[in-house]
Length: 160
Ligand SMILES: [Fe+2]
Ligand SMILES: [Fe+2]
Image 1 (cartoon, rainbow, N blue to C red):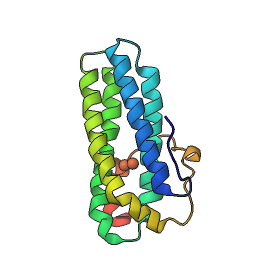
Image 2: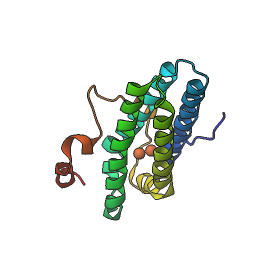
Image 3: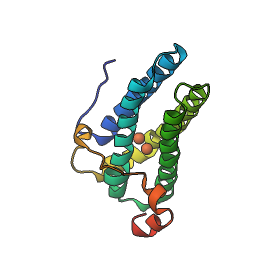
Image 4: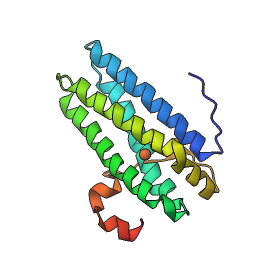
């Protein structure tokens, strides 16, 4: 599918990544429905989503200068933990009758989550980021997890 991506606009890059993740998730669902091995496709989705979440938490969200976004960002970061858990859950249920339910939940989580980001937070990111984001080059450090998973409330005093 061809999409118009303005590489200089962070929101444009991230919104196009949302669409790519949705496509991948649908492909995983289709593989599961056909009784095929869904794991190879899933692993592409997983890597893509993890990089996306990492970029938001470590690069994008900390740059938002307008403090009124803080509660929304905290909610989004909590949702990242749920998405992360959903990825883990799929992996431990792949090939079972639970797998389609896990994917459905992940799909719903992403729908809500992405619409919150696209509806405002990404605009605040655009306002605060002076350099474009080269998402393809972002690498998630080994063992990295969403920040609320590790630090819980402690993070709020450090950064948010
Ligand atoms: Fe996010
Ligand atoms: Fe996002």
